[in-house]
Length: 494
Image (cartoon, rainbow, N blue to C red; front, side, top):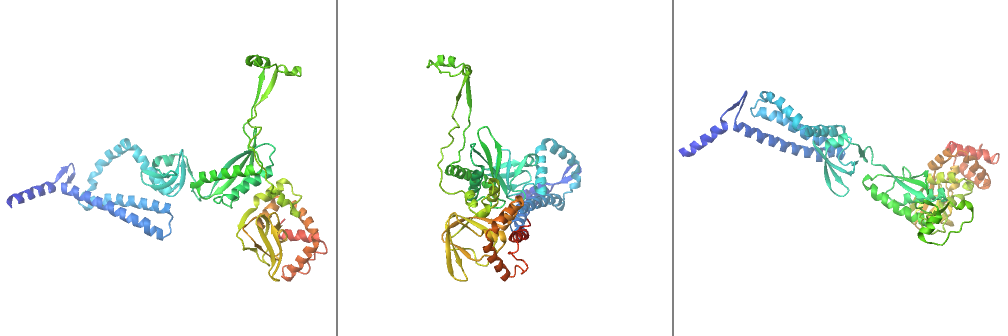
């Protein structure tokens, strides 16, 4: 027992023997106590941080990026506070360590300059939050979703599922495209060259139809088509669509390209190939070089040179035509729009939208506000009188309905129900208002066409009186054109 006690006392003296380093007095036991205490602080900080991020901040409704930023700042704050309090609580006077601060600062400044810059950059990212966890960003050739922002580096998960660690300094000093900043909406630009001689209105109509066939393209803001430039061998159009899935930007663009290629073929629109003209001087020398038959020259002006034209682009793509009417032709079947120019029809096409309705559903009921006009692109509908419980007639693809209700703001006098899955081109009151604002001169043209349907307007006017919408003093018989213009002005401010 004496030997064991001696060993214990010896070990005890080793652990408790004071060691003086200048003004500092420490011992092995004090060092171990401080280390264990700091490890406990780190574990506690991690536990509290996880609870704060995963439970408390979620309960308070913070988004993912805000939770990560708050939790990271809190984590490092707790550790920094622990490194200040724990040594003093264990009996180590840190004031006596101030003489080391100068040397440590020099060491950080010289040996750990890059690390310190990343540390400061991490604080900037967490406090200013130009990017946050969950954002989809693009920096140089790197593109992906931010998974973690630590005090030194940021983890980015690419579309290929690869996690890449990027120093925070690169994110602070570099040019970053943050597709998620503010909101997720972003716009895709797709270049579409077509051959000279193509109908610009038809090209625009086809591209807008393509945009609406891709389910991931947003209806609002509406897709647009721009005529960008007149190139050497093509008219260059550009399709612009909005999406709210920036991570799927490239797959959506690929899908649109496939649909564009297919629809251009269907509508006999040619995608040209590059065209070059090659002129060769001294054709006789060329003939002798290839030992060919003499070239017949009809005029002296041809003795110096002749043209050999490559036909790389003269044929373009062989495209089959379709027999169905375009949306432009369908709009011109409507009497009010039959005299519109191509640009005016294009404006109406750009601002309208498509809607798919399952079979057996009502598009509107009798007495509903007349705030939409419809063209049937595919499918069929039936018009019925709900009051009389009577079938009136069926409408097929290419027919239209509801135009008078839209233009005059007249309630529906019948109901319309789909007989099968039906795709409609819809112009609502907001779209029509915007269209008339762009082309105010068309209001008079439409009003003159409406006068030709005076009898129908008289019946609708009586219907409006019965509903209390019009007063007795508003008489259509006195001056129908004035009455129509006043009605359109009250509806659309034209």
